[in-house]
Image (tube, rainbow, N blue to C red; front, side, top):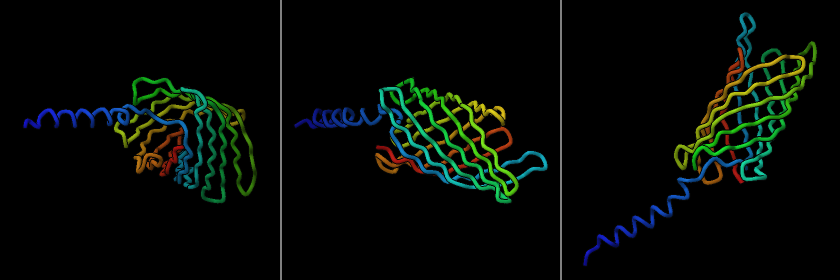
Amino acid sequence: MNSKPILLAALGALAINAAPALAEGPDYDYLEFRYAETELDAGSFDVEGDGFVANGSFEFAETVHLFVGYDTLEFDDNVELDTLILGAGLAVPLSNRTDLVFRGGFVDASFETPFFEDDDDGYFMSAGVRSMVTPDIELYGDWRRIDLDNSGDENATTIGGDFFVTDTLAVGPSITWIDDTTTWTLGAKLYF
């Protein structure tokens, strides 16, 4: 008996079953929690801080999602920065596993020191890419323009990656640069 046709049929069945997993692109239904380390180096003004970041996203149409984000950072000398963002995003598929992502929304920031407090708000716009380079690894990056009423405007760049521990849990690092500030994060996303 020739086992070659049986072997080819089994390999074909495996390939058909694996194809949907390889074809899946980024998911926009998640909750994310991250630990953040921040360093601000502006000449003689050099401070470090840490804190937490929480994000959530909900896809309500095939390519459209809503999102919310909150981060709180505490720096040296009792300086605290809290930021809230709300907005919407559009994911434009480039392939089965890669999306161009455009986002925009509202930003509210509060800055507190032992001597004074300040609140500021404005908007932001971003353009980025999310790609499932393998079924277990997602890489992403984006560029943002942040325009606050009192503080002016800033540009931010973020790159990062996530490794899927399970189908619904991914962990990974990211790094963000905003002018003289660098922020490293490590966190987890829970997909639903």
